[in-house]
Length: 377
Image 1 (tube, rainbow, N blue to C red):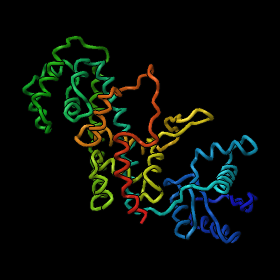
Image 2: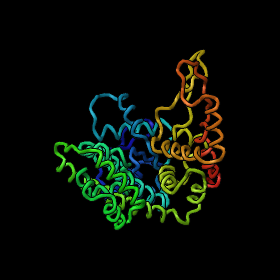
Image 3: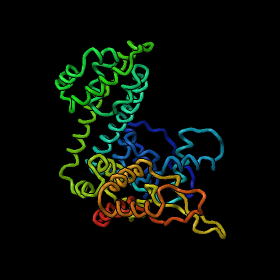
Image 4: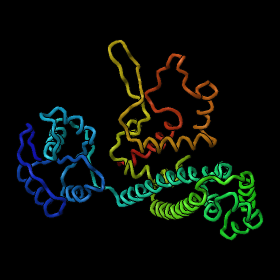
């Protein structure tokens, strides 16, 4: 969809995600005006070919968030939703409003980190679901054994691949189970064996469906172990991509920022060229309160509702880590705890928060955005 500065439709054409078709569309649009601005509502890998061709041909591309397009669609006539109407909304919104983020070609490292972190995200979520399912099955076999271990660690999972029921644990005993675990390179094999056999001896009753549930538990435990190996491979690839990069070294030198959080942060923020200052980054991450003033009601600040959830999670996890280590963040946290701010008390009047991001999150944002002038230069 192509419109002029007054909103009149000049060209409307459905274009396939093909290089030849996109180049023909670029040529047709450039013939209509001397200066053309392109707007898209998808900046992920789905539009990689389109964005690469536009940027390589010197075209200016802005990103219109899908939430904005969805809300602005109600201002146009008709309730139907079509690709043509969405294109019309995107074009008119980009024409009437400024300040949208410009899309440029990011360095290869940023694309690689975005791919690796996104590929790692799904297995991690799947692993949590499998562990919850395993514990649900195991509590129907031996509740004492389910309570005894944290099955997010390798030792308990390896033990479950071979022994899941109280009779099996009682038969093998502590010594033979210890030898069995040591052959599979399990740390603290003696302690694991003693705790497992003790849990097996605490239950003499055979629960319904025990044999079938035991086979399912063994299969799930092996799947989780295989998934852990895949996650270790992804972590090694992420560390390899980060190695030697100056920006990555600076970020990892901050307290609480390990390789994984560093990779996610670089993948979400890029080279920082789209951020004007630290406050802009804080607003994007949702850690800066926003005003809701009206008339005589002033300093009414509240938590934002529209922000990047993944970016907020990165700063939250980093701040949570820094609170456990000596430094300014831990001192701030302890001071607030001493002041009685461990948990909000609804019976007390609310004190308006600062407009700046607070506590450890503010420290992380301040240190990270110290690189902004260098990035802009």
